[in-house]
Image 1 (cartoon, rainbow, N blue to C red):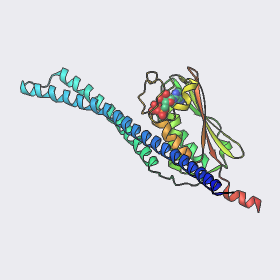
Image 2 (tube, protein in one colour; image 1 turned 180 degrees about the horizontal axis):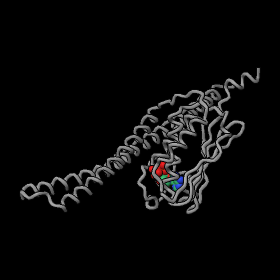
Image 3 (spheres, rainbow, N blue to C red; image 1 turned 135 degrees about the vertical axis):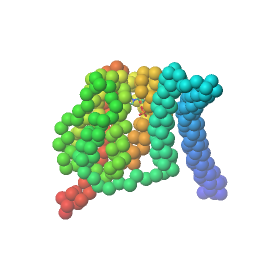
Image 4 (cartoon, helix red, strand yellow; image 1 turned 90 degrees about the vertical axis):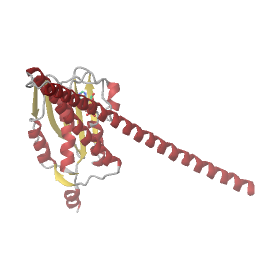
Length: 278
Ligand code: ADP
């Protein structure tokens, strides 16, 4: 073995290092590109409601100015137009505040926020969501029901109550938003290791090809189909909450038939398990 071998090995090591550096550089560039797109998509989404709001405010201002200049009492017509303008303003403000809340959640996720978790019984969490979901907006032709929840009677997860509820609401709200008639049903199931919460609807469904994309920020499958204006952020928040809980989601869907989402959470067996093994 001469110095040539040494140099050969050295070159190999350096090449390996260079490859790794390039790999890190590429993923940093990719992360940076994604971040920039997120910021630009977010500002675009915020600008749209702002434009509508500003336009309506200006319209009302002008109409009222004209009436005042004419020193006439405010006419019926201007009153009606103003009311419509205010309805638009109110709807857009509502949308914007939802958007800002979603953006804040994702910004926290990007900043590396860790969701604090403790062992919790899963049943009361699901029960409360089932009860509160009846007050969410949905078409009058859509029924909402939960099947037998007893499989969860002794199930614990290591989780955060508020975030788990937010997670379930995201899927239920979507089921309501994208279903015009039929029913939305929540069922529970469990394996040795996992607790599953299944939310199925009889709504518009999706193309299979769209499924991998729906968890991306701002992705909306064929937005013209859904009448309700969503933000396209719900499922990306759901994905973050799931990742933080070491959970996963299964999606089954068929266009014009409906969709089923199964949310899987690892069952917490901490203390019981230890006790059994001892
Ligand atoms: P959005 O605010 O648009 O609902 P989400 O991130 O929650 O955003 O969902 C992304 C897209 O996934 C939706 O725009 C919709 O196209 C599709 N989607 C989600 N849930 C359902 C469902 N239950 N039925 C049909 N399509 C759905």
